[in-house]
Picture 1 (cartoon, rainbow, N blue to C red):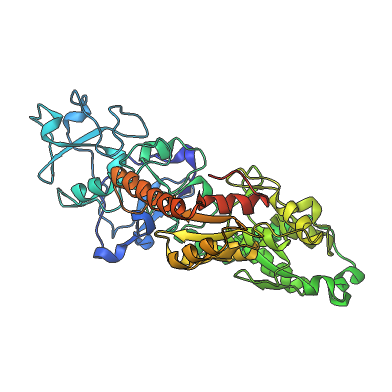
Picture 2 (cartoon, rainbow, N blue to C red; picture 1 turned 120 degrees about the vertical axis):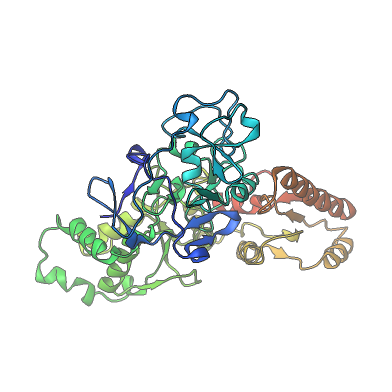
Length: 466
């Protein structure tokens, strides 16, 4: 059994595991988006018993004992961790360690200014740092990388620990992540999942996911009473209805995907991996508040007036061996706090109301990730808006339409640029805004952040400009 734990066990019996072994060079590490690095430790070398106590196979180096460090007695006055910038030591930080010229300094240190000072837990969970004998490697490189990343919890820089999901922008100080109840941890491979992605599977969990899923499905359906022969033939006898369903999952776990496919095979529905216009139901994962992740699939479903439902609807249909009314299982909240969008979208489409962005024309100014820009433009088009492809076209159209004054919007990217220091981020964001404002001033139109598009679609109504 792998050691996958929640908040309460995160640092349980970890004090002896300080040495990270570089087994196969760079193949053990992969760089995720936004500068987050995930360490890929060979899972075959580390095992854990059912109590999540660490054990090592004989092929692994024995655990390294704690050094006779000056920090065993008390930290040097003025010690501040180079990662989390805290002068305190707690269970979540571990003791202070001091390094100079790649070696740990264990005595004769008079001032922390002459050494690199870090918490033991901060360095332990920093991805690229490892020991080659008694020499520490990549410490300065990781400190420089972390200096560009702001902690998603406290807002300070030095956040070296990124969420395992590569597309996630969240990065944390190790002690800050430890304080977040919903973070999930893979103790074997030094991986962490943020609260938004806690349902994602770690690599060690995926290996046996199919057997686990089948057990989960069996347990989920074990309370269902035996079905009669008439009930068993219901799905096969039914014409139309379920067989016309096209189901699309959004942010589902492996178990949920398996249940969805099993249900589709049972009732004759179709499952598609990506959004398509013929999708009838988006089945989305939800958190403890009932909120779904704001994905492209969910936003397109709102604009298309399609059902956006929880997995409970699928399970209810399986339990009843027949279609269950969707209204009871319709999602009303997303993870950004926006509510009511799915129902409002259905009502707008069913009543043939004007589309959300009817009459609006959008010009996306500045730098956007190409695939993300395509998604934004697809949302604009689905919502009835028009996109303008070039600055010259924008100027020409606005001059030609001075008498009618249609709403032209210059959209700039307000997401922080990747891999920049905070000061550089601020400069770039201000530059983006200034360029958009200069263009809008020339033609007399409104400047908006790109998130305004997302907020409008999520709520299925126009919100104040931002």
